[in-house]
Image (cartoon, rainbow, N blue to C red):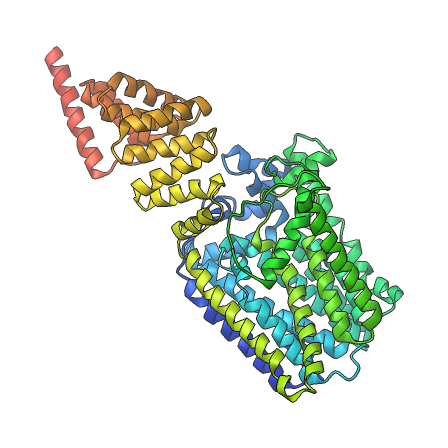
Length: 620
């Protein structure tokens, strides 16, 4: 790797190149190093902390049964997407598994790896841009210094931009950053293969590039676009003929069916043998909208990503993005026209300036953005209409396009003595602003409460931020605030059974048992087989002294889940209070068989045992 990176500057200033590598590493650690103590949040629990599959090496062999494993997470009560992710992204999950082996579920280790991957991606971007500018047949009179300045600028813009936080600080989104790493390695090794005169060495580099592609495809699905990008890069920027570019990229295109085939078999296994296209497209378990509506919405979403790259304001973990339902509505037609104009303009610009590698790189950057975003913003409906981490790889194209454009503008203004420092000053200022914004935004990720407060303030009409804020507040024992947040979530989505369950739990914690019962009765109607609803009802009735009702509710909970230890303890306490000591002792013993009683519980159980013995003695 060291040889590969250093060789990119073979014709340029090694000192400047080394300085760029140092700045990238230093700024990356400076911006993200203080986030190491941040806790797991949101989907980190679903896909990592509470995911037993990630912690078992047998999962990477599908437990010997592909069909069974594809449905395993659903069958054991986890999100069905857990099995899907384990099948489609085993490389990323294996890195999570290694983190788990080294330091358990300590978020520091997981986060440290994410930060290192992000810094590595910025370095690889620098290397790719530098390699292109130094090796292209369209280089012309471009100096080594200018080539390295463009590469360093692109890498630093990518590194410090606040839009990348979700792919770095959000641990589970290593899918995106690690996939990007293999994407860049695929490009870099491909370029290295093409400039090597030794055909044997060229073959080795090309083989390594194909391996990076295949490994990357099982890291994140957007590697599917890499062969197309390699073709256009080799042809339009590096100066190869279409035939030569096609020959060089043929091995990469041959690999493309691997991912669709795996997706097809996974979807078929999860849909009881249904091999239809609709079942395959719905493998991501979208939010109920069709592929057509999702695709329509992505037209404007793509422009939102572009806006966030250029002006990163209003960043939000949980966007409340409106669903588009008509291609003729202004929210769809206007963005479509703007995208067509941007792509058309890039093509026109390339046709008139293709002789200069900087112009070619600028145009490729626009194509890079739209090509790499196409996997997430296509006809496959994903659970969320907009997620910031999806712009991580696409943003690179915009950054090196801006760096190339800035250098072209600087070249024009350099003749005017008063303006020759304008572009470098503006670029440096923008980087400083971006770094400051990144540092400020990191505070939001320091706790779940901060994250969901921020999301709720920016998506006030969306149910999920309020619900998750309520859960986060409850876990920190801030019960009055939790009650308000969950009530807001329920108001936005009145048919959410789990919301009433959580509200009942909070109200029980506040000692407002009548209010808890009001919520839980609605929750039971919506989710009659939810164990926790009945358990919380039992607790509320018991606290109100309504023991027959408490007994009935707790028995239902135990009937639904016989190993529910808290329900056995609660029912034992109910029996103790109504002086049915033999039944109370039986429940405590059942709880003890599930998990050893603590000292207080054991003391009560022993006391009940003595009372039972006294009753038996009295009966004789």
